[in-house]
Structure formats: structure tokens, C-alpha cells
Amino acid sequence: MPRSLVAGGAGFIGSHLCERLLSEGHSVVCMDSFATALRENVSELRGVEGFDLIEHDIVEPIPDLGRFDCVLNIASPASPVDFRSRAAEIAAVNSVGTQNLINVARESDAKFFLASTSEAYGEPHVHPQPESYWGNVNPVGERSCYDESKRFAETLTYIAGQSYGLDTRTIRIFNTYGPRQRLDDGRAVTDFIVRAVRGEPLSVHGDGSQTRSWCYVDDLVDGIVRVLDNPEGSGRVVNLGNPVETTILEIAEKIVELAGSDSPIEHAPLPADDPTRRCPDISLAREVFGWEPTISLDDGLRRTIDWYRPRILSQ
Image 1: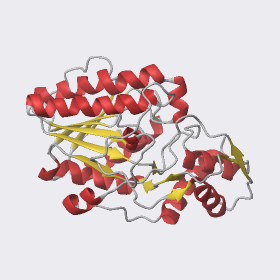
Image 2: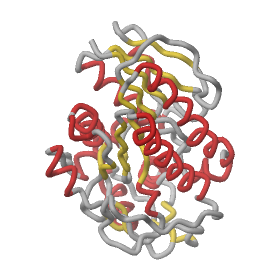
Image 3: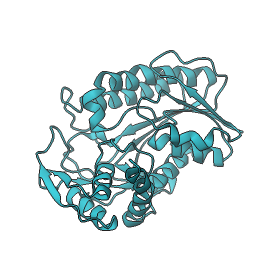
């Protein structure tokens, strides 16, 4: 039975990943500080055989928890709301925290898996973005606490592979949506769903023509497992996301329709450094790992709205 440490395991993506690893026979140590994660995300896992929950901040020294086969770093606040209120915390989690987890992996000679981000590409000049693109990131802007610290986390992971011979795997996650984000998370899909269910105006930045590529969380987790399990993943950086671009205005209109809402759509100024286009080149994921998203946007949004609706209406 493989033994895996999932840092950030109670978060939006991390909790879905813990479930998937458990279903595939892993024993899972879920580590989370609960700075932004919802405790209900892992409440049903606490009685599952092979699952342990450790409340701990990875910026602090990691306690001795025994040997692991895999150490997965899914930790870090990732919402623009958090970029404003938790900038120093985010920078520390992705630098000090990443190095602490690399040290745990080295002690066990375990695979080290880093969840990085499409934000590493910044305001891209290349479309779609391949893994070979170095990006165009503002190092001193409002988003830099996340963008640049994730880029540094990738550097630390690269060094661990080159200098210590560690088996490292890095993914760059493009926009992902689904159940288990906070209602006040602030990311577009969650914010639009909350407003649509409440009948409030949806706020679209700019004219809404900026694009994102929306991947349902179950598809993303499938990609993570494929990169983790495949020997070809060693030393790789892999884009995981939906290669279909959708404008912010289109996603807002679709959510209003699927939620059965009459919420109007309003426009607000664009935030600083907000990328105008974002779309992954997933040729590597397709050709090497046999992965691409399979859940349609309409289906994924319906599932997501169904999960959020009772939680929104109960407030």
C-alpha cells in the first residue's frame, strides 16, 4: 500500500485528490493548516481506513511522520482575494513550505509532486501556452506573491531533482472549478454561482472578453494521478487544463442560465495584471499520459451549482 503525504489535502483540489488516492489503495496523510480550507471537505474521510489528518502549517518544520512513497504539495491559498490579504503567507508557503516538503521527500527517497500554476505564464505572449514558454510575469505586482512564489517553487523542485536525484513531477494547473471552494473564495465561477443563486448582479471585469480555460476538478485529479503514476512523469513539467477557451462574459451568462437565475450582469474595472488570455497546450499530457478533459462545461457547472445551492441558501 503506497503511503502518501498530501499537503493542502483539505483544500478544494487536495480533498478530491485524497479521495482518489484512497480509492486507488494509498494510505493518505492529509496535512492542512485550514487557513483557507473547509473542514467539511474531509469530514467524511476521517473515519476511512488509511486516512489520517494532521493540522499543521508547512511553513513550520514538518514533524516526523514516518516514511512516505509520495509527497504531494497541493498547499497554497490561490484566490485573488487571498493575494491581497495573505501575500506574505502565500510567498512563505510556496518557498519555505515547498523546501520543507522536499526535505521530507528526500528523507524517504519518495516521489515529490508539485502543484504549480498557469499563473507562472503571467500575461502570456504565446497562445496557447506550452510548457516550454517561460512566461511574462510582473515580479512586483499584486499577483506576484502567488505567481512568482510558484515559479520559485518550480525552481526548488528542479534543483531537488538535479542536485539530489529526487524523482520530481510538476504540473501547471489552469483554471479549475467544482465543489468545495469557499463561498467567499472570489474566483470567477464560485463568485458567479453565489451571486446567481442569490439573484444578485454578477460582476464581470472589463468587457468580459478575456478568456480562461475551465477544467472540472475530477478531470484535473485524473491528470494528477496519471502524471504521478507514470514513470514518464519523472522530471517533467506538465500542463493540466482544458484547451477550450471561454470568455469571462460567456461563463457568466452560462451560469445565470444553468442556475435558473434572472441576475443581471454588470461590468467593473479590470484588476491589475489580470491576464487577458489563458489557454494550455496539452499536447504533452495527451501524448505521454493519455489525458485530456472529458467532462463538458455544462455538465461540470451543473454539478458545481447543485453542490453550492443548498449551502448558499442556508446562509
